[in-house]
Length: 151
Image (cartoon, rainbow, N blue to C red):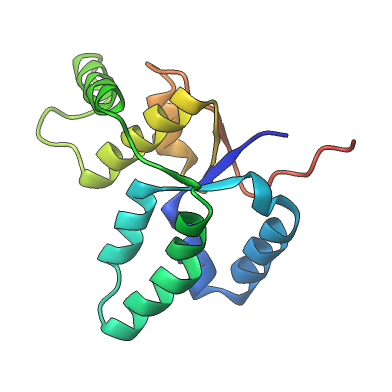
């Protein structure tokens, strides 16, 4: 069974849509033992917490369960360096502008490099950024929601 990391956009969509929240809950019902939290995703989720109540709920419902199980992925120094090289290559190949790269794209590069280091698959609704990253680096990405393999 593959191991998965969910991109931040899936949690955000689930918080804004009952349909997406239901889909996320169904996914967790089948895949919870195979899902890890990425520290970049935790950071992005906490950035969106505009009040103490939202922060407490985000910590309790989305971050702390992974921390308690030791299932948090954090980029290594090597992953940071490879993320920089991905951006550099994409700029030199003119796939990205040299006028600046959005922080969210750097975060996607960190997610890609550290998930790749561990052989994890990223689940995202932001396929465009990860397809761009895949032009210069190995990354395993799938759209929501993968089906559980038949045993």
